[in-house]
Length: 330
Image (cartoon, rainbow, N blue to C red; front, top):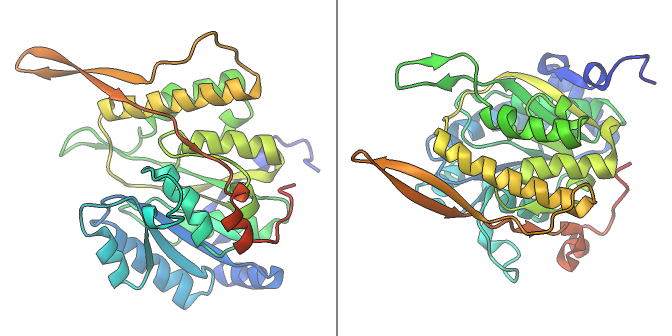
């Protein structure tokens, strides 16, 4: 029953509602659940140690909420893997997981392969570049999943300070690609999904069956694609969002965000075509054209962004052999 309330009112939570961690642990144990946390990484030497220490000390050692923490690395050129291993975390190089498959690099690839490595019923994904990491980033996400019987997927949102230069920081203003690209697209084709405050946030959690039954683009479009697929397969009533207060991380340049937007648009259009919501007589071009000012001259730069998508991992014989028991997302 929704008591006349909108989805936004019924399915939007605050992390404080789940700050009684022992209550979450008791409920988790009563339901016989196991929770796994994944950090997808690429050159996160500066922040990964603090993230591991904060989460492990509070939610693994002090409170038994999280059962395992795993780092899946894309091939960092810094000491990300060494640092993570020093702090007692299982570390995997992405290309070493399911080595018989074609090799790709990208965040989505890490998230997809984590499903094979992790053992949990609930999977938590947390980005590895968070400077103000706090246990709420985990207990806030798993809270609705553990305490509510009908919620299967939870997305984070937060205030995102943005650095204008080395000295000036605005308290909010991050999430530019969301407001300029993803929310307008959702508003046109999936207005229900436009209710997610930050659809591109890198922090989310869900039951295994939400993730292993959907495809994963290996690149920028993974968060957008994930929302669309979980919505189509599981329904809006199984999805929720949680306010995690504030997230501080490094901000990308507008040029870099342009490439991200290009990848998201490519993914979005591909999924619209596959769903029958959009028909095109031609294929989209895969080259992003940008310009760089060099000694008063603008130089053209091109970036080829191929949209590669991993199929639902549930289709892999290796995965089915490891996780034979499955249930419906509904």
